[in-house]
Length: 483
View 1 (cartoon, helix red, strand yellow):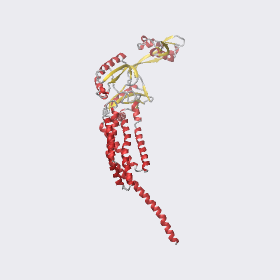
View 2 (spheres, helix red, strand yellow):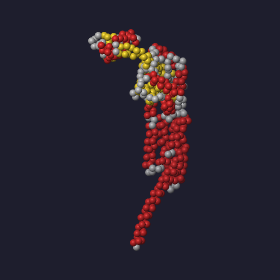
View 3 (cartoon, one colour):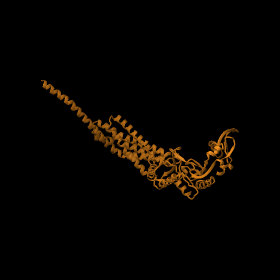
View 4 (spheres, one colour):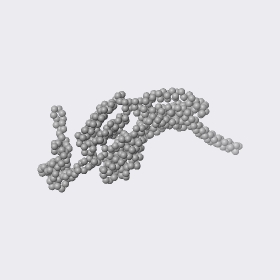
């Protein structure tokens, strides 16, 4: 609701919102709470929240995105409040909402909150105009009516009142103060000190309150304080010691969270003035920090497989015939994900790690037979051809059986469907492309590296033979000269 609204006005808006929500067939029930914002974790009369419980997957026909879009349209006529719908965070504890989360930071020396609000509004406007971003919003508002208490310290000292005592008394009377506990009827109760509601109903009631001075006399606050009406945010948030405005939003349908992050960076570079920047927070920050870890894990897996194969073949060249055949399957996995409209998430990255072992197994079967045939006297080309022909049927059988087992994941529906589809589609697509092309690529790579290994060995043997022949020739010449 607008800044300065009463709890009654906020409750009226929540009642209207709840009436609209209960008309949605996909919603099981809702509960509302006035006076608190779950998103920004702020308590205030102008804030309110509603928890929406959807029906189970079996009873629900629409997707989450379509339900949210439908609710936005149905509540658009409510002009007394700014209403936003958002999903809970993917991982509990990392932020208060799904989608992206960032903090707009004011790094200028001055703390002009109105300027921060203008920059925030311009930034939000630019974000919402970008085709990759949808529903970017912020709860930062510096226009809440407030009162500032000015204390005349000299007058307070003359009255025998210390500033600390005056402020603690105001806190007790206007807010509350925990005093002690008592036990009654087997239950423990708290004792809270606070002025009666009729003594703190209006801002002017502050001037009518009293505080005890050092002599034990009651001194009215009106003797040494005055009140000034101002405007400001209900709560000033800071991030990394800078004044910050929290911004939330989500990627538009058909775009990934990674594309949304890239789009936000582009908008920030072209929109934010000097002295303003932004920092990621919540789940988005964790996503960016852990984004490169998958690459490192992938490289470690490749190195581990390479060293094992090098020990098995007793060669540092032949394992490359296996390793260099893997990028084809990995490219196939990314291509199928792109065609299916799925994003490269953690599930797809797990599938890529699986493909290292599965496609590597197919390549190892061909290389193993080729090595055995070459040891039996076959030429390199004949050995590679024999390896591909002899292992063609078992490779196709095991690969297509694995792909068939992934079909249920590729067409999964219900809870967790996106994760199942991502890992199933990436693994099946990579396995299909890697198998079909691998039966041609692996023999060619074997011919390439086995030929280089044989060429290097022939050079070494020729060098050794020449070195052995030269001393023998020298000894014959010495014997002839001696005769």
